[in-house]
Length: 258
Image 1 (tube, helix red, strand yellow):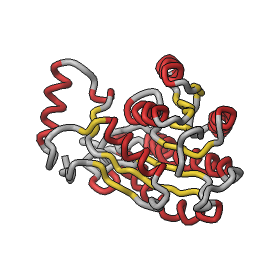
Image 2 (cartoon, rainbow, N blue to C red):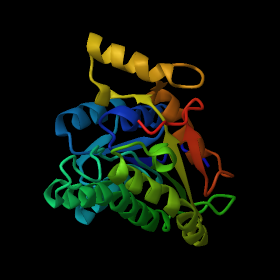
Image 3 (tube, helix red, strand yellow):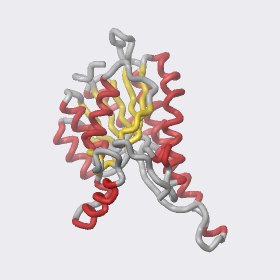
């Protein structure tokens, strides 16, 4: 699938995996809409890569449509990459065994709403816009890449909400691709492992913590780079024969219970 002279929307595009993907897409000649909640970083990145920033909560349909329409004004929308998401860690039952200390149900719902429902919200609306594209020689009209996590398969203690949400993203990949085949839109999913993003912070303590995490990776024994995720995301967008796949990018790690 030809990416040059098309547009893309990247959610969570202001930092981490989304930022790296937005930069690589721009380098490939794509006009990128950086969709995020961080106005300062998102605006600065969009200006740097020649794209557009849109303040976007992925659970807000009107804001998602605004981001998609902004992309269409730049060039035909052929790509959508879902990187927006949140994490949460808490055990299902509290130490005191009281009902009140059980996993907060509203927090569980919030993680599911953003990570799973938000991903589907962007996918359904982006695919709708793509359905109006003139198909290429393969009958393609666009491609979507969703982001899950190895926690979808190797969820650790305290990751019930997060793993549920990411497992849902993996689970929707095949039926989504089957649904969208009728309009010529492909859908794939990436399950990143331990990737070095701003979530780990900076400084000596952060570096020591990341080194300990990297020691548990099979090979190479380090955290992944955002650029490595971006490289896979762009390959899944551009390679017309990649469809309905959920691919781990984790250097062979299998997460232990804790």
